Length: 79
Image (cartoon, rainbow, N blue to C red; front, side, top):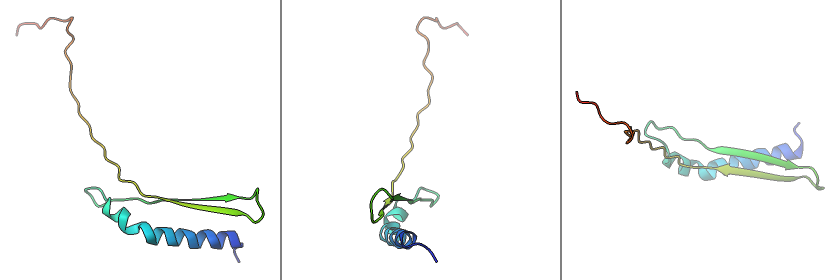
């Protein structure tokens, strides 16, 4: 039998996952991969224990440019 805080966290995780799954799926990359970050924080400094469950969905865009820059102090050699 799980403590009540674990059951509450489990229920909240399921609720947030169901609520944000479609949005996460829409943010899939070109290969169809996507992720959902779920975090549970238990604060036992309060009575009753406080529980915070966070869901994070983010679309990551990575872009890159590579180039070379000639050194202006180096003259070009004739070929």
